[in-house]
Length: 264
Ligand code: ADP
Image 1 (cartoon, protein in one colour):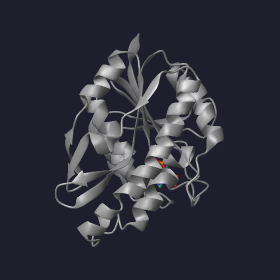
Image 2: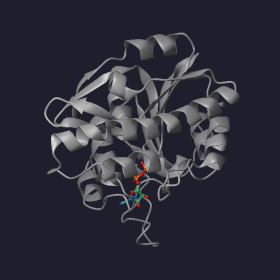
Image 3: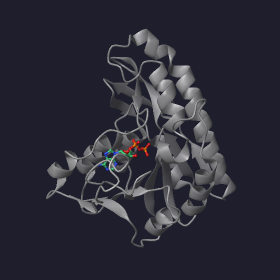
Image 4: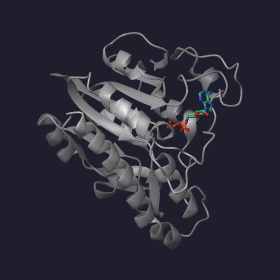
């Protein structure tokens, strides 16, 4: 069996980010489940919050540093409910494709302190992977020792797990071709950056900005910052466009495709 990989499904790809009440992008989800079948090793699928996470988080004051603790805590059931619906949907798609899959919700295994991970128990996840189960985990609201509650993003989870598990690759799927020299949603002539490493990282970081969507967790610049800290020789770190059919399959089969690689 091949080594474990982490695949992050961007909220912008698996949900209709502007939809209220939140809706899943079923066409993308069933295609992605089929593409994931081409990998024959351990699989951790990390979900971004998209419409299910960000809107409810926003409506309860997450993202605003002045929101009182009590208000944040009151938001927990609403956010958890939406994220559970999204996770269940992905779990069903993967099981339907014959990939035995379980969901492990961060709320039950993570505590935060000032938005940073304080405790994150991965015992059950390791056991599930050892026993041939794919794991779905997702951006979530978690108890925070300082703030009452905070949002833990899918990107942060993916980076944390890449450090804790023996993983071969981390693939970050989003709705653009990787990192460009300007936000492609605002500047259609932005140029694609195929590799970010110690030679160009400072320059690239000045060019990545926040997401265009109701995103309480950081957008592209936070992704690149976190992934650069993870960069090491024997780990493939890739940001790619998951809205384009076939690119995930190419990556899983080790074939070349349009993407941004993050290297030391
Ligand atoms: P996801 O929901 O897929 O995790 P985000 O919305 O958090 O993705 O981040 C991806 C978004 O970041 C893109 O849709 C794009 O609008 C924005 N972005 C800002 N600057 C850049 C850049 N330099 N290169 C690529 N994307 C960028």
